[in-house]
Amino acid sequence: MRKALRLAVMAALVSTTAACNTLDDAMVTVFGRSMRDQPSFDPYENTRLPAEGAVSFSSGNFPADRNSVVLGAAEARDYDVPDFTQAQTSNPANELLASLENPVPADEVSLARGQELYMRYCVVCHGPAGIGAEAYIQEKWLALAAYNLALDPVAGYPDGYIYGMIRVGRGLMPAYGHQITHFDRWNIVNYVRQLQAASGAGQPAGGNADGEG
Image (cartoon, rainbow, N blue to C red):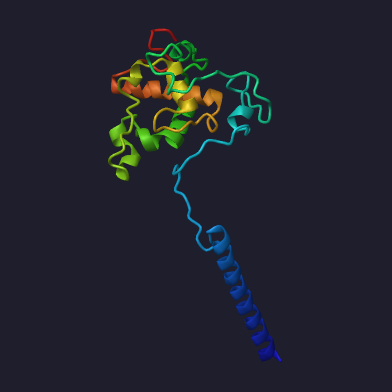
């Protein structure tokens, strides 16, 4: 009796597997895709922006100050940061980025938070010290030119310009505005200023290129 039951179970499994393969082959014929072929992506490979109209994490976290969290609240205000393809240094639209005032003082709290986020999002392409040649991505992609954040010309950019690059991206760099919240972007800016000061190319953290800050 037990032997007959085992045989019945095995037969059912074989028939189910065969049916799945037959169905999968039919799906390949119709749609050109197979459930048996499921490619995966490495981190940061083939990155895409959220769908138009999607509510990102950062847009639901725009508090009145950096010490508050308002998850789920509607986005009350934000900067209308232009795309960098139309906002190069010589473009009048860049005046907006240059005029943005950094609302976060470069204190220990901000620099610690900025370092945490930098090491999470930025270090792979810009290196732990902000030197592109030391970027981790260089180990895999030797021909990829990693941008130097701790050296010129970034050391001469206003705080708002660096904020804008984080928000909307630039060139090969994707936008991180949907992942990094408003005040955290400024925390990263402060930490980048610290890296620039450490390299001797920049100014103290929290300052603007025009001397204000």
